[in-house]
Length: 241
Image (cartoon, rainbow, N blue to C red; front, side):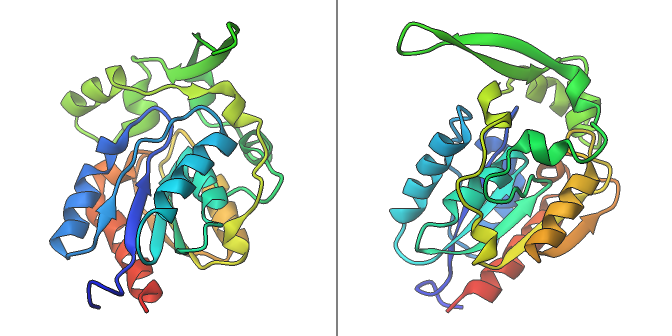
């Protein structure tokens, strides 16, 4: 691959995390000379978050591979409709269909421990109203989100969470880019935040090339960056012109 034909990887983090959660994956990709961008995910609603990520992708010269973790999978499903997006990588992620919400997708399967560990708060809206957002209880965060990450790291992650607007759970996906574009998936088989069967179902429905990471928590990009980067590298190779 030459630089001119190598897709740029755009890494989209999910709820309760930020772009730093991709640090290990970024280092792996940069070591191979793969161009990579990890923008902030607003976490305020599926349509608006996807529009932001799509705008990031559209302003990149050349092809783009979108990789989304967790709720970020829903975002790349919608944002992936951007013309220059050539591949999608789902990392311990939701893979909704057109018109389907995360709540509807998750509702087909047993609820993971995450549901009982969420804590509700509110935030102000521009019109003077308020909306609901969620974080994970700090004492539950290590086990639910990052059981295979060292304790000293999870203590930091737990207090650095970025909350997700409640509306993101109920908003249907405007489109499903995986219906038109190739996809790959990383399944975290010990995930306590998104039922691994939800991940498997979405990946199979999308026809994704899937890799299961044994013993991996929801924070698989933190705990197993090489395995995650390997899947993204495969998507980049397959998508290079």
